[in-house]
Length: 94
Length: 419
Figure 1 (cartoon, each protein chain N blue to C red):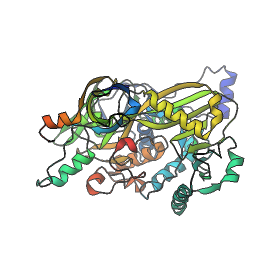
Figure 2: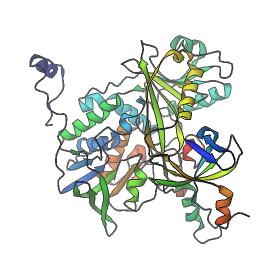
Figure 3: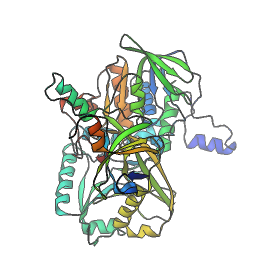
Figure 4: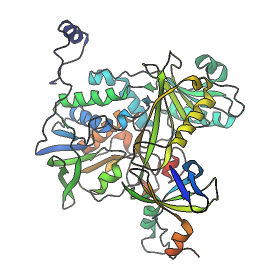
């Protein structure tokens, strides 16, 4: 498996480290349902059979955090985006 | 039991008639319209559950539904190691119960599962690691499990091929559990299947569950590729695919699916007569009766349902092997393969009821499912039959992630790829 880092080009998967599902969003700690929301955020995962958006870091390269869209049935990679761009588009990062 | 009892006499009888009288070890029945219990998943745990339901708890109107063929999943893909050298209170009694069931398994099933208590040696490489293993060994002994610390001179007599004076990871000794060992994994699936079938359990292969019929929060049965099968109770034992199957019942689980690879070398003469694990990397090895070295290491580390892994993990496992046992560099690798693990958020399994009445969950075995097979089956059968957890499995609750009672043997937190 090779991941096409937007900065460094296609590199072997051994240069990257994996964090997990990129679709989980940190809940609002002030919400009424915060306790249940955080349990869900920390522990519950969709774990899809197929298309999965996931966080990788190019740890042995440029260190950037990436959102990779990959098929968990075949390991085929559909898209690689810089995580900050994804967060900006979601209105989270500055 | 409807099946013939295997014995020296049946073998002699069949020898004299040219082995023409053996019957199939289990039937291939059509699904009935309704069962008291349907088990989803004909792997080790599902078949063991059926066996103990029928034999121990007297529930015999049972079907095991398997989408492929029995034993085609993780029960036939692991490195066959059984042990009970755990540290935490929620785990030790459970895995020791499993170890005791392994010790009596062949008599219980009337089936040769090649249970071999050849022992396990977990190597340590520093004073700190010796302390950690001494603590683990003491925890085991306090629960009545055998454990002993082996020093380097004694270890040199047992495993002379190890690289004791390795500059980076010198070997200082090992934690030993003599009762641990290996079991022929296919035979475990077949033995449980034959025994369950003998009690009247229907084992239905090539029957994929495609949905659940739930009315007013209560299970009514399962939709399958071979039609609807009604059931008063349904047990899920489909680790690797637990999230997919549970999602059909509207459940979301604290689980990620990950690929774990295993390896076997060409057959060689007797080389290692115990199970050995490297303490400074992740590598475990034993030798099969055919002579192949059977070994494995870490999971690949990213979500996968592909039943195959990637080359960096192969390299990492083989490097770990070379670091501890340089002689294996002369041996050719015969095969490698992958299986899909239910990696739970604390590295421990789940055997519990679910919010759906009559639906029971057995999941999250990470890569420790094989050794747990008998206790998992017994505990799950107990839960289904009596609607109460088995005394050794009370900690494996689904709600422990919300209540903070997680069982994190490795201490890495909610990061499934690190367990």
